[in-house]
Image (tube, rainbow, N blue to C red; front, side, top):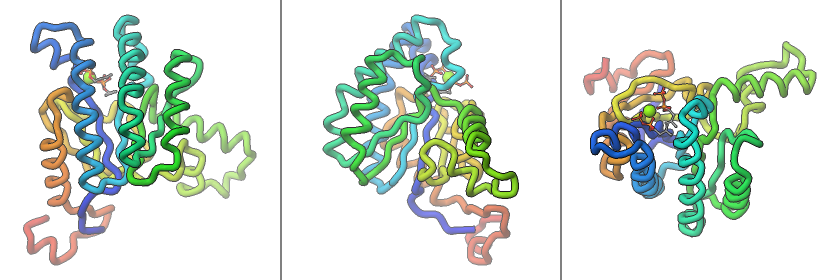
Length: 243
Ligand code: IPE
Ligand code: IPE
Ligand code: MG
């Protein structure tokens, strides 16, 4: 159990772009385009608040099932966003990583830009931004199991801690807070291992409208939560009204 301050690791499921566009009778792609401003605002808000790890769910392994035109648009949009913002991300001390990205499904130009951005920002330490792109939580777990088997690890040596070392980016701490916009309340295969004990907040605002003020509100809500990790509430917390 612990009292909570600023979450070390915040993860966002950036949902609601299509509905944002539909409300305006515009194509879904307009919603994706409008999402960029929210992404930039949230990165800055997280950095300013002292969040050390920020993960953003940008494209799932399931999202490949969307119409080809929408998928192509998203690939181009992500590439453009990286190119536009790489210098400022680097200047702000942000280390960028990509979780997922199974080659050769990703267009080669985008794959190159992703590699360049990771190389450029790899030494930064102010905040780590992990973009979950072509990401699937189950795939990561299956890949980890495969690596264990290939490495002939003995069954007795497989523990939660040793297993986690076979996941991509094993230095990533568990997620403390997940924010999923647009009112949807599900995991959608997102960082399944890492969210085991995360707090969840589901703002109804659609992602393209999500701004720093919404993010700060979520941090406030998080601060009022009591994390138990299976334990019992501390007496002081009971006095404050937590049950
Ligand atoms: C999230 O918005 C962006 C991606 C999944 C790439 P959606 O495109 O899922 O928007 P809705 O859920 O249809 O409104
Ligand atoms: C989850 O959103 C993936 C991303 C936000 C990138 P979806 O909109 O794809 O998830 P479902 O289909 O509603 O579960
Ligand atoms: Mg959605």
